[in-house]
Length: 350
Image (cartoon, rainbow, N blue to C red; front, side):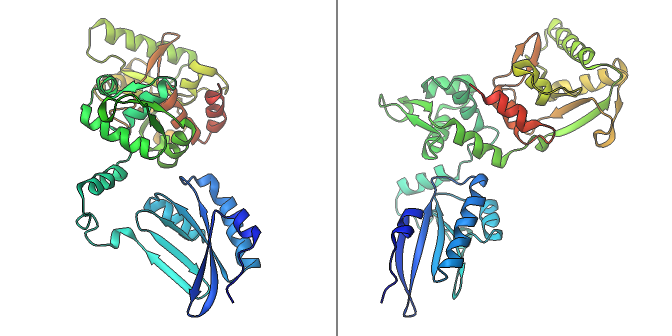
């Protein structure tokens, strides 16, 4: 007869299906996640291995709405069967092997029968953590209690209103934000709904090491370095330059300005592209700085940003020093190897 779906199957998994494989009865056990985070992997792997050990005929499968190629590869390497709504499927169990890459399905978009479906596919393809698109999330996260009009986001981010509306749909579809009941489309308000999930997913695809770093050994104590950075900014401002904030501190030197927690002697600062050459020259001549290969012995680091457009969104002056937004600071700290997560956790406390 058919295998029995025990109470434990239904309690430990979200769905259970009967499968007749060449006359042999089997059960598919499905674990459903609204999104995938790497922190889920140890628990899921242990759960799937327990099924294989105690019920070899049963097939555990993870179901997630969307999985990037990198995440699918990681799940494959970990031996976790998985499917997503884009058509990806990987199942490798005794007597059963399925491996479908959605990229191999020809003309997927041309096969869509309505413009609505094509629009939905385009929305799913948007990366809300890209340089330009992330401006929307940065603004929403900067004021979690605020419901933003699309026009206000477009004005604050200096973006096209239609593009903002498209990004808003992508963010909403992932559960990071919600729309108000007032108005519709571009006229409805948008508010952050799940900041924790947004930041966790963001940290999966970004690390501070994505920035290009130029390091120097400068013969000054940390407090002297901050004074000289302050003087550099004042000098640019006195000349009436168009750069509002030519630099902004990050990592532990930035965290000091919000909630000092880690003792250090390192200064990390993002530099606007049109200010880098001048600051580099100032460090080498006025600061007596020497370039430090691979950062060895360095105490001053200039970051040419990976997020060229959005890294300065929300940057501000604190204690007369420029610092990136708490959002950017958290993203940089969480994967920083020297007590970065510890400082990020302190920053994230209410």
